Image (cartoon, rainbow, N blue to C red):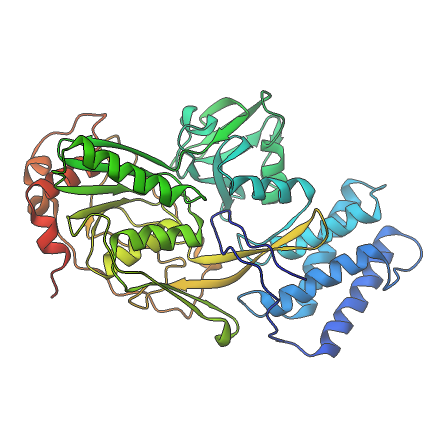
Amino acid sequence: MAKLLAALLLMMVAIGPACAVAPTSRADTVAALDRYRTEFAKTRGYGSLSSADRNYVLFSDAMRRVLTEHVKPYDPQVLVDKAVAGLQKKKAETPRASDRALTEAALDGMLGGLDPYSSFLDSERYRYLREQTSGEFGGLGIEVTMDEESGLIRVVSPIDGSPAARAGLRTGDLIARIDDVAVKGLNLQDAVARMRGPVGTSVALSVRRPPATEPGSKVSLTRAIVKIHPVRYRLEGDVAYIRIATFNQQTTSALDAAVEDMRRQSNGRLSGAVVDLRNNPGGLLEQAVSVADRFLEAVDIVTVRGRDPDETRAYHGTSGDLLAGLPVVVLINSGSASASEIVAGALQDHGRALLFGTRSYGKGSVQTISSLSADTGIRLTTARYFRPSGGLVDCFGVSPNLEVKPANGNTDETHPDPATCDANASPPPPPRAWKMEEMCPDVSNSVPKPDADRPLDCAVAAIRTRLTGALAGARD
């Protein structure tokens, strides 16, 4: 079946055949599926489950895709263990659950246990993901993941201008309750489903902000149509400030228009640019490559590697630089994930920009959305991406050349659970680093105001002194 490739954090966009890498024998797969049919019939409490049953066909299709396409190999019996746990939990909660409900619970259990990003997509989730890539959707405007240590939902990043952002939610916050329902014990998909709802309706979130150990506030949010403006911009004197909030279908064209407008406003006298990727949760791979290419020449940008070495894809830039070599500083923090890390890593590796801020999130994997039926699908982690230098981003993130903490006291960082990382992966070498005293001494020596944007202030100062253009391309 053809694949629909879209994006939540980072998803490749293309149509293509399934990858044919068989990690297990056909006999092992058949044995595991036979066991699933037996356990399914036992759980529902009557009859047997035919191999022609449409619900069984749905499950077996999904499991075979996991076995052939997921970035990590899995024992089919382990997958069945996860599925059986899911359907047994559903049966205990809803004794009269239909076969379809049990099947979806089994799929949730199997796929949700693979990694933080893989999942089953029922009709509502499937539609929601497709809407996100178009730049407008209904909801709270928040990117979340499961916090394995606490069992709560952790905020990766709120979307600029969304209900979540207006309510003050920020990276690292833990959601403990959704209305009157405790999050602990829910899986990620169930929790996200409870936060969604009709536009105009409200939902109350109990939020814990680490290092606090108890929820400190209850926030009421009104669901709304979230219109994602991928690029916002303004002039900071003669320095172009470009805020990229997400990588959707309009990002590159919006970037081009922003630079052209600021070039006109400054009468062609721009001295450099600050590209702000803080709290940008990612988006479309092709847009990340295109944005990076706007600042680079015909060089490597990112390599995507899956299970099958023959499926490795390298993405390259084209000649031409939107800013004609003017100095660039990229701002990142632990809310910068996925596609943001592609752009930041490529510009840093090629010496085109310096990175200011704090280490990025570390979400360097590709999720592929495959349709199971007309209105359902699965999201699988099918590949990981590597920077031009060869460094793996997944879990390691991208480290800045100059660490600058925000002035408002929000110094908490959030990164993937190490248990979900590849224990055999080698960390990338640290980048060349500078101190604030070297790059922006006036900002470093001043007492920051509570509302000061210290990373941005330092970046603008560094560009104006013309240090960035020389130092970004320097080599040890």
